[in-house]
Figure (cartoon, rainbow, N blue to C red):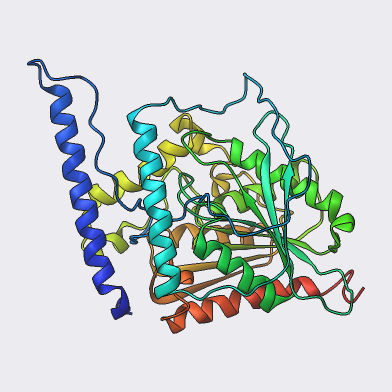
Length: 398
């Protein structure tokens, strides 16, 4: 199916951004090789909207302007083990450039919510800080659906997208999406504000997600949630973390996670399942697409060899048996579409109940366009339907 006409102008802007970025990288390499007195310090390209692993001109980032929430007293952080695998980025031009890009991305996303998105409803929200052994503590925000006869609602742990290096639960479209999903499904959303790369690298984010899941199961009753009806949801890079989390949970705690919902997930960081036919059809040369996609893994992983580990690339796990039922959502014009399809197929082969849906004519970040695209509204409705599965079974109606 042809690309939806709505994305035509956005695609032109995105292609221009990628070509400009490629030219800047080439100039940087030439400067570094020039032997006649030029500084060896690499130039930092001008900041602009950061790119994820798909045709897009917007991304997710943390924002200091968080929505008003009720914060528990005594929230704080603890020291990090010096032997952890966290990579601490040094201060300097690169860190400043990253901060500038993230700030620009927040401003862009705020505009996107106003022009193409749908604002979220005013629902009860609380924030909590979860201790993570050996890694930075992590913030978890709980979006509660409107009260219904005093029943404890099910809850779904949610992990945002953004190529591991940008994003956050304070991002306007992310916050609005979680609000709408909680209100429409009657399921609480426990959104995890995991750390960003390259300041913090794998397995920091996986460990933060597991600590949040362990905390959620342990504190569900005190939080007024149903601890017998808990799911996991992740988008893009968050989809990678969600899939990895189900593996970690199976291998460690074996908490009774009821389902997993994966939206445009990246499940193989070696890049072997990336569909470059998609980028070619969008007029993006293979060498540019490969560079962009590989940069995601290089930013997230301390060493490229770690891409073969199951918790980094869940599709490469020796076995996917014993994982919760899965709902996988992909987009036709997304080079990650094969990651999602291959993962759903591997789950089925392992005896796990899994469904896969591909939305035609749309791109990686389609869910944010609920204000202008029928496909985005249908996507939202399908996610809500999957979340409502948590109302079935043990604990329902209690």
